[in-house]
Length: 231
Figure 1: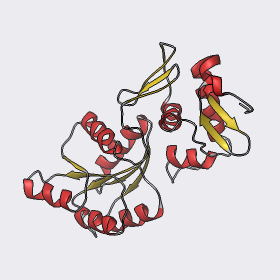
Figure 2: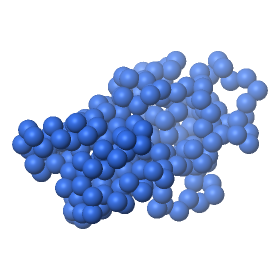
Figure 3: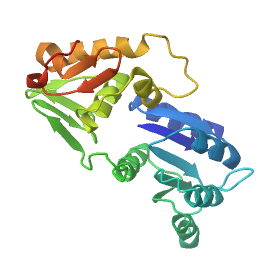
């Protein structure tokens, strides 16, 4: 997923960003409410992780303004204020869920999975399957024909993206935008390199499920659907 992390505590922001990226997510960051609004208005995110107490503009007001603008990005509110009224304010402003600080990182991942299931058009289950390929998005376990496959973070993220909407064509820029953050410089062939590694990890049969449509992009289909396409 592509995430926007809005947190003004530098150490916490670095810790959360690093952990999320290690779990295959692309993460952009903002350190105040106005920067968060600008980022949310200028890019498309799967989930926003939004701190309640922020400089310049508080998290509740950020949430309220985005919802007023019909921005439906799922919002997970982080708060050091665990009192019920503070949680209610965030939820009433349009937040989808909240997580009180301090928190365990595994709980953050679980909350992200929960709110991400509300994204329109995305499959609402932790287990995705297409033919012999099976992916558990909760544990990041990948298997083909019953055999476990270990995937590096970026390759896993690409596979999950493609598997959530089988048959949908993603351009190279679509994939880069979802898997890498906006501050990362993209070499011209970075997506192709990771697609090649993904195919190799999936094996001779599984690798054929990742199809290249020349000049357009990539999609995931069952091997039996491999007609008139290139790899």
